[in-house]
View 1 (tube, rainbow, N blue to C red):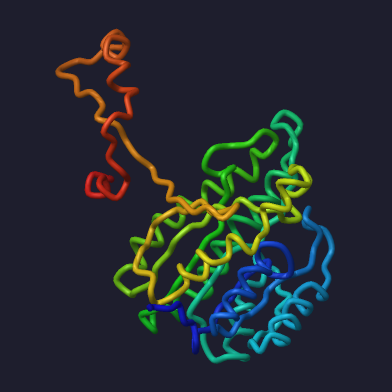
View 2 (tube, one colour):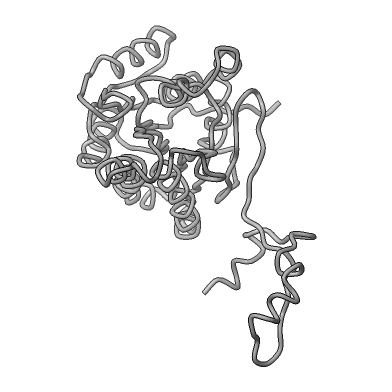
Length: 290
């Protein structure tokens, strides 16, 4: 039986001091990876800093026989220092899980610019900055596995989360480009949209749902996507409650007009334009992208 074995690989997991990030770090270490547990230790709204969460996770990993090192750098302003921690502790980096994030929820009409900017900074710019830091190392090695954490909000929307959903959707767009640019150097980039009880989501979940939504139920697919066994790239997976499924952008058969097309032509053919019968998925359409 084939097994996922990360022995000898070095992984960075951002936002790994609690919740989903903690589960990713522990599971990667369980499968043999040496893990940089990055967490600034802020509140879920992004306030303050505290080294205890990252150190606690490192302690858990070491107590189970794994290898880990704590890093407290800010993913937005000091991503390069996270890479330096990996190089200093383990000599390289092979895996990056971009998980760090905050939430500042409110209805769009009441959402101020600071709440918008701060959430996009941590989720989107943090993902960019950490990926930018490790990219040259992975490119030189001609090996890398990057898993970017998105959300169902980024795929489908959620009331009160315009900032969060925009950031998580943008991460998917970024990943689509990275998978193209990384392919020639064996850098595979995939996305996971978790359904899990974390400090960012548990306030919106009932106790029953929380009990069924353990972060540990998401971690296995992240670990697999970080392994040499994975050859998929550019995919989005929804994971949670013990369920795993792929999500994809698709287009319907559409309608092609001739000559000068008017709004009345659109009206007459809108059912065809709007149809998703016999869809084609984004990987089938790449050659038409301009």
